[in-house]
Image (cartoon, rainbow, N blue to C red; front, side, top):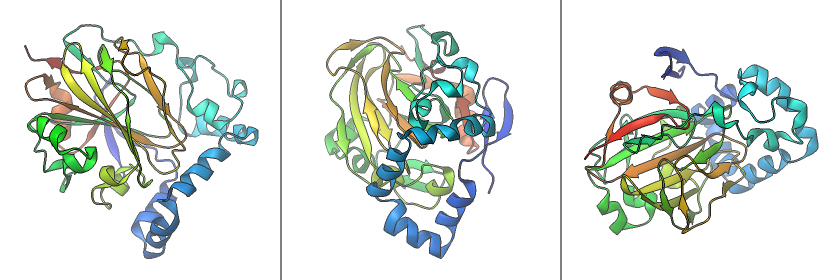
Length: 298
């Protein structure tokens, strides 16, 4: 099954270049692969060791080919050349020039906190949140908190899936104050649609970090970063309890594909129509950090 998405900037339907496509399909679609997945690949030790290898200097040899294979525009990065990075993780967590990701500063606009492929759901059922079409999870299982889950019933869920080729720093979608993140231990399944269609409650099973964020313009929201296969670490770079500006960096993922999920309470936001329309068709919309996802409901 090929994976397609809509490129928001052009409106064109594009085929995703999947890192490790053959390996993913073998792991998730065959009996032998499934056995290895459950005994090794989903375990923390596999991803941590693999992630650590990306910190060694010899890993920098992969950078040039990775840039070419995934057609990464290095003119956006602060350091534009492969030789400027000391190892693969140094490249993977690269910073971009500010002008590469213009931020919509209109206070009515909620911006995407990351580069990625977006699905958005309005009026969610806390006991039946969509993972992919036909697959659901309970919000309380994701958050490990019944009371908070109840507060977001009938609210909005926005899922931003990052591919390994994407910019892997994540930012605040509005100005406000973020509290200490809650770390939840878990597995390291891939967050690629191949895995999402196979693993029930995948987001609730994977390692994740959850932050309550008091937004200046959209009320309290939940920011959730989900780890995945070969994500060595989720690194938070913000200072808990301090006011942050819209678009300010919150943290970054080390090597691997990952996901950022936002939850907003009912009556706060209307998601942009193009994202809603594509989501109803079961297709993701490619957006960049700083782009508008929706507009404040007054």
